[in-house]
Amino acid sequence: MVNHGFPIAIAARRSGLSQHVIRAWEKRYGAIQPGRSGTKRRLYSDDEIERLQLLRRATQSGHSIGNIASLSTDDLRVLAVTDTGTRDSAPPDTADSLREASLEAIERLDGAGLEHILQTGLATLGRGPLMQRVIVPIIAEVGDKWEQGILRVAHEHCATSVIRTLLGNFVHAHSATSNAPVLVVTTPPGQLHELGALIAAATATDRGWKVLYLGPSLPAEEVAGAFAVSKADALALSIIYPADDPALPGHLRSIRKLLPNSPIIAGGRSAHAYSAALSEIGATVCGSIPEIVRALDAVRATRLQ
Image (tube, rainbow, N blue to C red):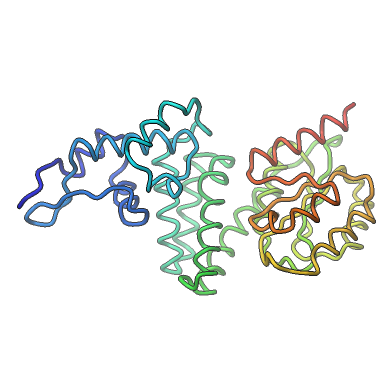
């Protein structure tokens, strides 16, 4: 029996989403289950189009499609009523399309294609939204799939290589003023994944900071030495992988001992695993780019007092 409905072009126009995003949300997240015509073409009912509209509104308000795709349509209606703002002005379907295209390029090990997609995103969205809406979710998803064995080490290296170059260019493209605050950015010993540190560095440069980026896995005494030489105002540490290093709390305590009064900002997907040690050293823990911005602004405000 044919399930009557609207073709995807109509669903895209009525929902405000691109056809690419609609297909991706169906395939990757199971957010909708359209019917099929006798020739296997997707057909969308009025209820399904309403669901797409609600999903679009929720992502525009800052919710991750991965977190809300399984909600019932009734729950999505409630979410639409309770949400009051958007995370940024970038159209969600644009960011989602870039993210999906980037992940597909990574799966093909197409580094040149990934670079082109991200450069297109840079021109379309700007640096801040590109990092927040595209690059950070890509890093998280590639990391998850690598840990689960879905992607190979080669896929992770392909993504890292392209994104590292892009973020490095962000950091070096800015020239701070002579009286700008100085931020030292690195990862603690044993933390070899540096993309989180580069995101923090790029975010700081956007806020007018002078950034001394030192790469990953720096011993405590080297961090302190660089901090002293650069006359830095704060230290940013990224903690991504591994999440179960028994030596890391000791490294964090060593850094605090050498920098007893300096602000420390910490973040990264595994920072929560070391929350006790980070609390012990008085670090400000950030779970998102907006939180990094707030932490940097707080340090800067204190510096100007």
